[in-house]
Amino acid sequence: MNFLGGRKIVLGVTGGVAAYKAAELTRLLGKTGADVHVVLSEGGARFVSAVTFQALSGNIVWSDLWDARMPNNMAHIDLTRGADMILVAPATADFMARVVHGLADDLLTTLCLAREVPLLLAPAMNRQMWENPSTRRNAGQLAADGVVLLGPEAGEQACGEVGPGRMLEPDALLEDVIAFLQPKRLAGRRVVLTAGPTFEAIDPVRGITNSSSGKMGYALARACAHAGADVVLVSGPVTLQAPRGVRRIQVQSALEMRTAVFDEIGAADVFIGVAAVADYRPAAAAEHKIKKSGGEMHLALTPNPDILADVAALDDPPFCVGFAAESRNLDDYAESKRRAKKLPLLVGNLVQDGLGGEDNQVILFDDKGSHPLGRAPKMELAIQIVAHIAAMLKSDRISG
Ligand code: CTP
Image 1: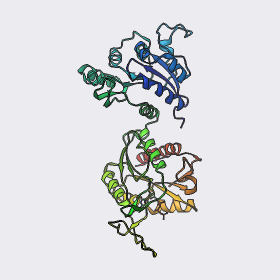
Image 2: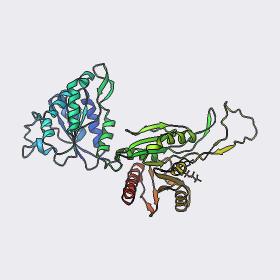
Image 3: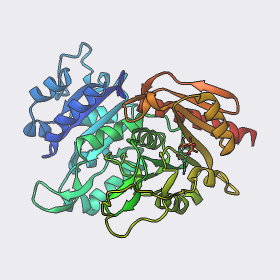
Image 4: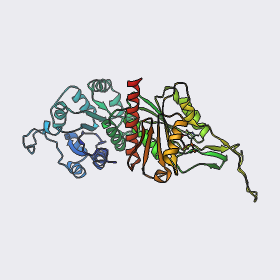
């Protein structure tokens, strides 16, 4: 998705081994729609050359405070005009210290001092440098000054040591940049979601499941995290990675899903049931593999609890959102499902429109009626659904 379309990002690269990852980051930011302007420090240029960044960003790379190419000779100011952020990746310990003290003796530090845009730093250094009391103090001061620190994470380092100080991987930085730029519609809210299919065991090697890919639920969890919510995703078996910043609890059966949801629901403001929960499970799973008998086989099934209806029936339920996948009569079935389960909001779709695919077409049903959203990628729909939930929560608060 073109998340960063129309965004201008000034990417500072300082002198650390992780500078090689900044090349990939430049590519990823550009691929996501951003216009990337790289400012390479003298140290950064020792690790990766300006040519690489120019080729990957399609823009001139800046290094010199005295560069005469800017018509008014004000590169230290003009580069951040109209920008959405300065992102420095990698940010060395030395660079952090210089920003803390407002030093401005090269182009990048001058840009940081003369900016009116957010400053995000992705520190990268040896673990002793990161743990040194002066770096700790500097990190604290930067946060107090409103500078956003992304990472670092712990892991294997270029010097051969293991510990905190590794720069986040480019895909994680990209995700943090995307999230940073999204409106924080669910700030301070806690959201619990279910996603994916459930798997109801018949015997140790077989089970009943369905073709839900989990994509819609995972996209919604990601959109909620982007919107600033604290997100718990209770997921049936899928092959997707947990979205960054989302706490995932993996389960198999509907009963396990229900237990996990009820363990988490106490503090939730919003519950979104996206999972395609199996309505029935084998009455008793066989302890050993069932052998073929040659004749007919009958499997006794027993109903599973309805997780969403049970959450909505709590004394003080969170704001509950349901999904209805129907193969016909969408309007009737969806609205009666919403009323039966006592949900303020239900997202309906025709299975032939969305199951397993990248796109979907959904209609939102609430007390005010039905609101069709156009056909779109699941992530775009997720963002629109989150906006709708946030607006309903807000009007709830105003009227309540
Ligand atoms: N759901 C649930 N627990 C169940 C069944 C459904 O939490 N045991 C939730 C789903 O996550 C979804 C909504 O209920 O948000 C509707 O699911 P769906 O399977 O479409 O509806 P059902 O209520 O099962 O009705 P039917 O299968 O008859 O259409």
